[in-house]
Length: 259
Ligand code: SAH
Image (cartoon, rainbow, N blue to C red):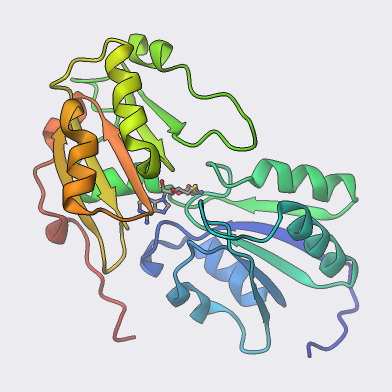
């Protein structure tokens, strides 16, 4: 049990980055050290939790596509209740809290409840994952920018406008796309993207299990299937993938396991 805190509670949404705890920001570590309650997403590596106080209460509130997860409304209620009790709550999310992390919805719920809330950004998987295999997602020689897109329109939401995305010429980084990779490949082909557009799948980026595969748009689904690349993975589609020269092992080091 934590001693009853005397001051008003607060919630900090903290981005834990894609996996490797060395990719936490110093601000994230400071917030973890101060937290009395942590609400932790599935995609957060356990190693990150070593920065939490021993006395902190850690609640796992998994939210992984396809698996049973804690309803969002329950997470909102829990954050609000703990903050009202005076706890310093850290809501720890994989990657960046505002990139497909429902951080926006959580901020709204907290503000509505009158709870003090702040956000600490994290490295998002869609930038740090490609970087780990040497892909600069906005390399100006190949693209004018990057679109971060969901491959999984939740709760009856609309699917991405693949035609508009193809016309834009932006690098496409698709989150939550692995389960629907065949549909995505087909949609992009139908929207006029070249069959030989370079593509990469980066799986479990910045973890000891990281793997990746390089292919073309027309072999994307086949490659995911044959290489049995698991979730979480990002799909990267665009000419920038030509730059993928670094072997993954050279691009990152998991040097904190012994710590
Ligand atoms: N807020 C997170 C994204 C959450 S949505 C961020 O900014 O990274 C969950 C999706 O993120 C997964 O389906 C996958 O597409 C991607 N993802 C998260 N962690 C990943 C990792 N370590 N490697 C590859 N993709 C990852």
